[in-house]
Image (cartoon, rainbow, N blue to C red):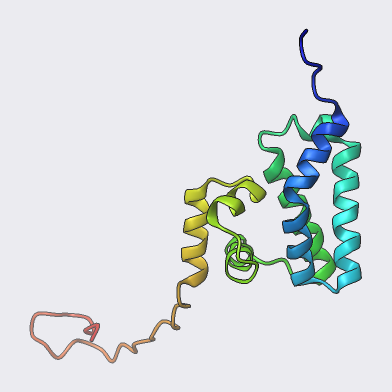
Amino acid sequence: MKPAPPTVAMLTNAFYDLHRHAYHAYAAARLPREEAELSVTHLFNVIASHWTWVITRECPSAWAWEEHTRTVGRRAGHTPTQAEDTALLHDDLHLSIDRIATITGTAPGRVTALLAEAHRPPHPPAKRHRNPGPCPQWHRTTCCPA
């Protein structure tokens, strides 16, 4: 006897079980508790009610994560960069690179690159060098960079 295909409810429950904890933790890190709960509940209601459309996306996890971060950012009044979000998931919520890749629908190598970007020290402001005229050295006609 051939096993029955999974139902929409089974698939959405599996997606919910896989992502719920991380989505709640992310929202709670950016929003007050009640706002975080409302945001996550609303997102999973949207996913469940549009599941057959969601699974036609190239990467349903990426679509759902983008929807989640956009909603949380709007509610928080600030939309962080992907690097900032990745650092939050890794450094503050202690998720592994593979887990972040699964949740966000991003390749592990991209997660690693985003973490490196987030941990890179900010660039100091560029030094402005006034050009006082011709360089005092005989072989240069513009100001020396040093």
